[in-house]
Image (tube, rainbow, N blue to C red):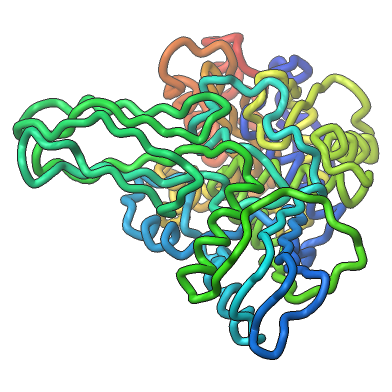
Length: 468
């Protein structure tokens, strides 16, 4: 922990020790993206062809969809379903208002005159590498939304929303639906509707490397809808299939198939869609700790700064960012979100980055605020009704056995502090780490600067598994 104004250390316990940071790594990714790309940077998706369509609306060739890492593309069916999902069941903060639906883009193409596509839907996602899962991601995470594959052309964060409702009659199969209702993914259901009062026993899986989602088990009659957010294999083809289906629903027929092909630069631009500005994307990313957005930004940084849209290209950009701050060693990074178990950071590294980023209002405003954020940020339930509420801003982080919290807080005598509390080696629920962090957060906000070291020392003596 240090003074934000001068960097003078106020308290240090295991501050130079390496810890798995979990989503505290997003501090590096988001701060670097704002510096490197700029808050007004927008990520684009281009619709191309060899020539324009005829006067009667027929495009005699292929419609080409070229992606440049926009994480905000969605389809309307998914967005409308996400709006009905209770807060506790949501994936991150979806929907968040930054989405651009394929339906809205197709309407623009129709207004421009497109009525029929005589060729194929070609997807070009070559802006990023073909590797879609980072080193150190657990195979157990692959079916679930927080482990979604990464591609330059993506829709719905590369997830499929699966809903299960009980049948009107006991003994019948449950009603399993997906949004979008796409032919790209096969859903196999071995489910039964059972009597009221019986325990729910649904199990959701996705065959590794396959676009088959399997739902097994039972759901009681009249039970509330069960919602799961499952990943898909090959984001680019998924986007192409969903686009083809959206085109069909809008009355634009497609004669050909969905194929992948890297296209030449001499294609004709029909339409360019641009995302919300990077400042808004970072705000959502940090408030909700969205892994997919962080990884998309990491690869975009690599593509722009290093001409290498890979994890290694993005990591090289972050290493250069850290070097400019005088941080040359004592860390290891493997992805942009913190999901990888290979990541290692020290609390001192995090506090230095936070101190250097404190004058970037876009970054500071993106951090969750203790006790507020109206259910949006990851700290809205924590430190409520304490002196830290509305004061402490910090990035949370949680993976199995890990809980971290790093950010800013003002002491009782209004001295701005940067801090990092990292807990590793937790057996069981991460609540122990969160409770410790919350106690420290309240302690920092409720004490004068001169009294903080003594107060913190008492907390630290009870555990030697965290750094501050």
